[in-house]
Length: 318
Image 1 (cartoon, rainbow, N blue to C red):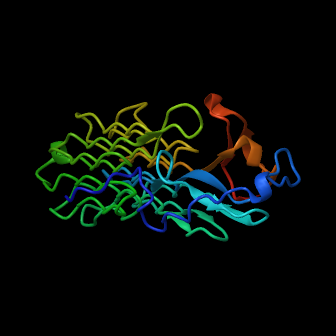
Image 2 (cartoon, rainbow, N blue to C red):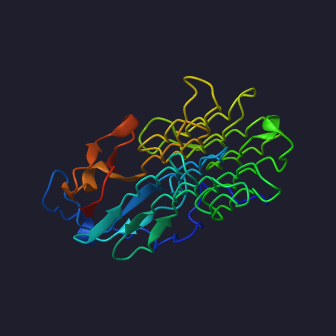
């Protein structure tokens, strides 16, 4: 399983640095309309989290967390005054129910004039068949137990980590263990015999003024005797345990892009969590012009920055 690059970068898929900030014209800042209204070009930072994948069934693998891309703490992008920027928030992938593999989460996207499109890939699905690998995605999905081929899915470079392998042995009931889904900060754990793999942990980010962890992987499912895998920090759902009352699979957490937990037996697999897109701009430049009903907070953490938090599709006009 390969080691991937740190996620706190703008070098991930679909993301590049933009031109530096330009000075104010004529010695003052031209104001536009809205609550702030700075129409001159100004700097912004972003966090773009995709939807987590859906967990798999049949001693399945946990799903991968959604792709994680940010320039917070790095080089800002430059927004052009009066231009409209489009935000797409990816939904979590559907679970495999009680039948098979889940589905890949949907991508989250930030695009508009003067910036390179930022695309975070949806989390990989958890495998629901011991002869198939977990799905590829922002972070990879975990593999199911099987005949040596239940490998974890691959992650997108710079967005997350691979899923864990399922146990390859089919020597008896005590062999059943699915791999954990990968997270934004850690690989999913490989199952060891009947011990299912935990989901990989996500990554913390403080663009909102407080530290929040995003994009954890879902836990793998286990047999009746051994415990299932736990979900990774950052919204990953727990895996299910065969024939154990109350040990259902947990869904990935919405607005964190967590991967869904794996199912087994009568315990259905769980869906992935929806993603999120957050923009941060200087208080004095915030235009007040949005669609899609984002949550807006000013002077977050005493930084003089306004955050625009999208949990569904929308736009921001600079």
